[in-house]
Image (cartoon, rainbow over the protein chains, first blue to last red):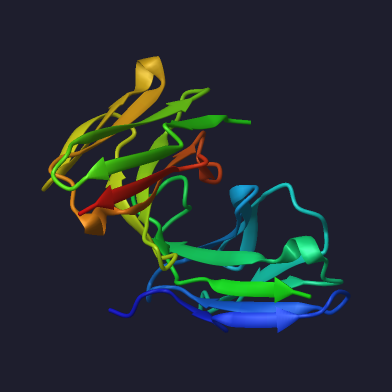
Length: 115
Length: 108
């Protein structure tokens, strides 16, 4: 069974641009969670989607948004990029809601650099 | 929200040594997981352990939910154990909140 895949793996953008990251969960998984990892703030929860609905949201500005498609693939979008958005963006999939299930499977991440 | 604190923040060991990593949390949790992030950034689930004790090879974990802490034991450490160990908890089926992690370096 294929693992969680994220594309692209690396991305360089400039301030003010927008970016879209993609995550394909493990087949059969209905939940996709997104996290931002930075050296200063650690691993921070962005949002979780389950069956195309946002179920939980972390404390991030409205520039961060996401969606989930009927095949459970998910995208997250960051508009008006700021230098502080440089980070490793991780997605994780699980059969049920992340808080209810025994295992989250993480993708390799997308490393975003904002210049 | 739930506070998750991990200690120690950094740990350096010689190969073959044993170690104990701790995770304290501020509220009752319905989900607690330990993860290992390797030097290339990949996060791997080690244990799902909201209570009780589990063992998997050289690794074991114990969670005492009534006292709000969990411990991860690594025995006979190997260089491949290096990386960052995270504890993540969830309360009432909300999102998983991660601690700041313990960075483990195992020297040959």
